[in-house]
Amino acid sequence: MDRMSAREDEDGDLLSTLEVIEAQPLATRADAYEALHDTLARRLEATPGTPS
Image 1 (cartoon, rainbow, N blue to C red):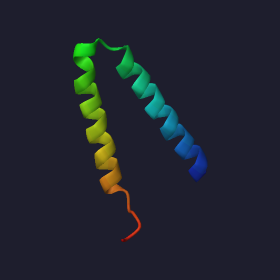
Image 2: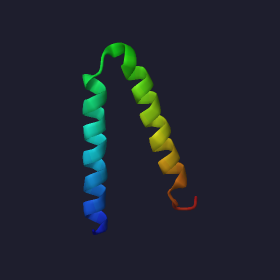
Image 3: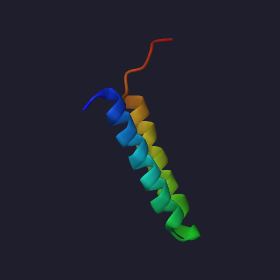
Image 4: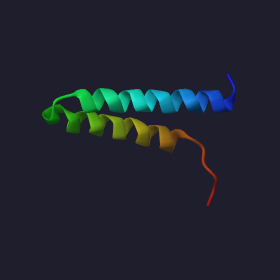
């Protein structure tokens, strides 16, 4: 799988996750968004970036 296809899959997964979260009752959405935030933050920190 090339880099662009992998990116498209990740974007699709994120959209699917957001749709699932939005379908949940309001009382449970905050926890789901917090878990998603934690996951994305860990992935961002683990990804090598451009040195500043």
